[in-house]
Image 1 (cartoon, rainbow, N blue to C red):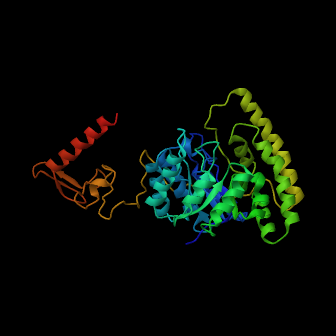
Image 2: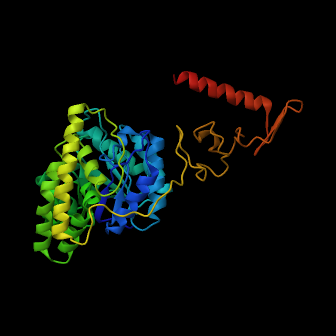
Image 3: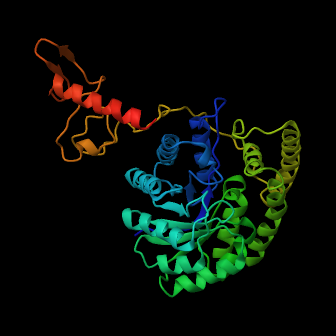
Length: 395
C-alpha cells in the first residue's frame, strides 16, 4: 500500500464572484503547488472552508483537483462530517476518483464522548477501502486523542494522522504509542510552527495551509532535514514564524487566503459577512504580508517571485447541481443515470428508468415510453408517485 508522506498542502478554496468554487483558480493553484515541489494536496480541508459548501461542491472540488494534477502528486481529500454516513460517502467518492487516501477528523458541532468519537472513526475506517489519515483538530472538531490513534492504527487502512493541536506533547505521545503497534504509521504535522521539531522526533511530514502559501519554505525545511542540513532547516523554520503569526491576526482562514492571493491566485470574496472594521484590518494585513513575504522570499529564495506567473487556465467541468454525479460515474453497471433515485432501486438490476434526457418518443396509444429501457406507463406512474411522496415526506 502506498502511504503518502512529505509536504502536503492543506488547500484553501478560491471562490468566484457568485461564491462558488472557482475552477479556474483551483487549476492555477494545483500547478503552483506542483511547480514548487510539494508531495501532495489535501482539498476539502478545514482551512478550505468545506463546511461552507455542499456535498456536490466538495465532490466537484475533488474532480477539478484530480483532473488538473493528472497523477503528478498524491491527492488526499478531506472526508470530515458530522455523521459517519457522509464521511463514508466522501471516502468512497475519493476512492472512485483514484485518490491516494482521505483525511478524517472526529465529528464536529456536537460535543461527543470519546467512545462515540472513536466509534465514528472506526465505523468509517471499517466501511471503506482507502487509506485513512486520522485528523486531530480540537479547535473545530471532537478531539482524536493519542490513545484513540494507538487503538485505531491497528486497522489496516488507518495509515497515519494529521496532528493539528499544536501540542508537542500530543505529537510525542502519538509517535511513541503508535510505533509499537504500527511502525509505518505516518505522523503528519498540521501546525506549521513545530514542523522541524516534529521531524526531528520522527514525524514523516506535514499537511498545512502554509505549505500552499509558502511552499518554498515548507518544502525547503523538509528537504534540508532529509539531507541532514539541520542549520538550513532551522533558519527556514524560524523565518516562517512571523508570517504565520501575521496570518492568524484576522478571522481564520482569511489571513491565509490574503497571503495566498499575493502568490497570484484570486481567492474571491469571503464566505463570511465581515463588518467594515474587519475588512479594513484585513486590507491592512494584506499590505503587511506583501512586504514581509517579499522580504523573506528575497532573503532565502532570491530567484523566486512573490507573484507566480501562470499560464492561462480555463474551466473544463460543468458546475454541479444540487446532487452532483459526473456523467461518467455510475453507481451500478445497469444504471441509466435517470436522476430519479439514489442508486438503491437499481442495486439488483431490477429497475431501469428512462429519464427525460433519454426519452426518444412517447406513445400514449401503445402505453409505452421508449428510452434506454422500455417500461410501461403504469410503471412510470408508480415511480413518479413514489418520488412525489418522498419529496413531500422530506419537507
